[in-house]
Amino acid sequence: MTRPTPKTFRVKSFGCQMNVYDGDRMAELLADQGMAPAADGADADIVVLNTCHIRERAAEKVYSDIGRLKREDGSRPMIAVAGCVAQAEGAEIGRRTRDVDIVVGPQAYHRLPDLVARAARGERALDTDMPADSKFGALPGRSRRQRPSAFLTVQEGCDKFCTYCVVPYTRGAEISRPWDAIIDEAKALVDGGAREITLLGQNVNAWEGADPAGRVQGLDGLIRALDRLPGLARIRYTTSHPQDMRQGLIDAHRDVEKLMPFLHLPVQSGSDRILKAMNRSHDADSYLRILDRVRAARPDIALSGDFIVGFPGETEADFEATLSIVRAAGYAQAYSFKYSARPGTPAAAMAGAVGDAVMDERLQRLQVLINAQQQAFNDATVGRRTTVLFERPGKLPGQLIGKSPWLQSVHVVDPDAAIGDIATVDLLSAGPNSMAGALAAKKAA
Ligand code: SAH
Ligand code: SF4
Ligand code: F3S
Image (cartoon, rainbow, N blue to C red):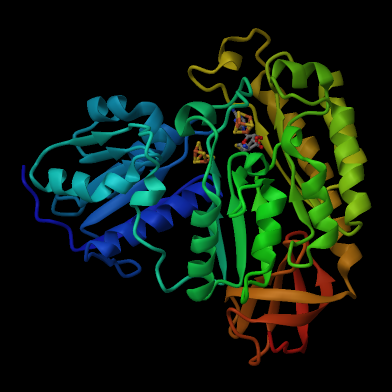
């Protein structure tokens, strides 16, 4: 069945920040083709579901989302499934439903306009190639309207092959984008109104590239170059792997004022036996020694991590080692997940599955500890005067929400505060997930 070429679009992104970035780039690509974003709540001619495959039920969620796009008269928009489920299950999606017109993987979405044209001719368009020529060169320039806090993907893919994880299969091998492309994109983001840039990568601290003088640089070199970019006020990066946490990057936390005092450094477990089975190339102690060096460089740094409970073979003693490493690390926040067996990963074939009730109970205990640490971190910042970058309106009238340097959400009610401002704020009180603050003085930044 042929379809009219879409005039309006909606992109829905799930999963990690790299998917948010890809979703933004797809939206810019469709806008570049003359399509307009559908208004909030309105019907769109094409809907892109930009999916995540990291834990189970991701694929099931895609099928139920597709079902919900059906209109009352039985028709539906043109539907594209993008992202990591598309990469992992492309052909399977085509077999399971007739209601998807386009399947496009994370390394092929620069070809979306061609896929849309094919779908309009009534073909089903599948593209899960991982072409050698990177998509980045084929995408249009960044739009002139950017959020105050923008994402910039500098590194993609993963060669670490943790035994539980699908990312090396869905995103492919580690690649670093070239220096000039990154600096140019950062300039365009700042020209479009971004005040803060978060450098993204599945292993962002593995980034490596040659600077204009031909010297090989790591992520710290890139951060030092961005530090000199006029108009850019804040730099962040995520996600890092302990193996790639080199001293130069740690030193940048001491030297570069624009580099925010926040580090997300997942460890996954505190048990060396489990870390080995996970194929993490560090143990609990080497991880904690990295944190010591980071804290020596930047004493106020806010630390964050990721944890998996119930990996195959995890005993109560292994889990207690995880609680111990959390106590030793002292996090400002952390994410924790129940282990989810992913098809095709080595861990899915390992013996010693942990029952769901045990996983639930461990997750609960871990989260109690993490929440207490988060509350303690927030409590310790009450009374401090700091900066907040306002990003969006809050729920209450006149309320704005922004981020502190330590990535806390801070809400302020003040007619003098505006989205995009970096203001000096007194932190007044701490909740578990956010801080209340008041403008001390508006900074002419
Ligand atoms: N590259 C990053 C993040 C990858 S995915 C890193 O290595 O840190 C984000 C988090 O999802 C991981 O850190 C891990 O905690 C979690 N995760 C990945 N695969 C998972 C699985 N199969 N089951 C449960 N959690 C998983
Ligand atoms: Fe997955 Fe491990 Fe790679 Fe992170 S480092 S993306 S957890 S394989
Ligand atoms: Fe999900 Fe893919 Fe990101 S699996 S976490 S969207 S890299």
